[in-house]
Image 1 (cartoon, rainbow, N blue to C red):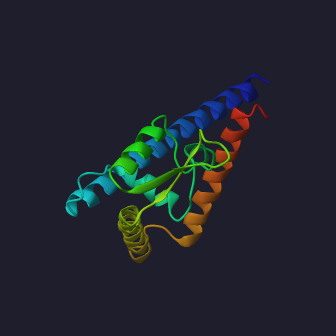
Image 2: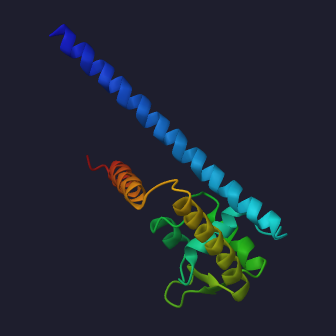
Length: 165
């Protein structure tokens, strides 16, 4: 019995280590993604917009949304979403309009300038996808496996937030 409990402890410790490694990797990948976007914009001499703002424009796309919808749809996670939206409006990348029903709520959508930035990010991601495929970095099956696993983690964390165990 003592041997079995030692094995369980080691397996649990191993799983925790793997989980923590995964968390660190996801965090590093997100930061690296922002660096890749930043480098692309520096290469193109687009310096007034930062990577977080460019990613926000990319994720909004053709939708018209509120700041709350951005968070609830998972397009943007961050405490400064309102700040970035205001900056993007001030710089001419987004239009904003008060909702007719709830005057406290503001809806935003991309301007032509914002759609241009979205196009830059779209082309960057398309180049990356093409490069990863052509260099056999990862198969489509591997990409599907990663996405499936990440969706399971997303559901688990969402359930934790909602107190569903």
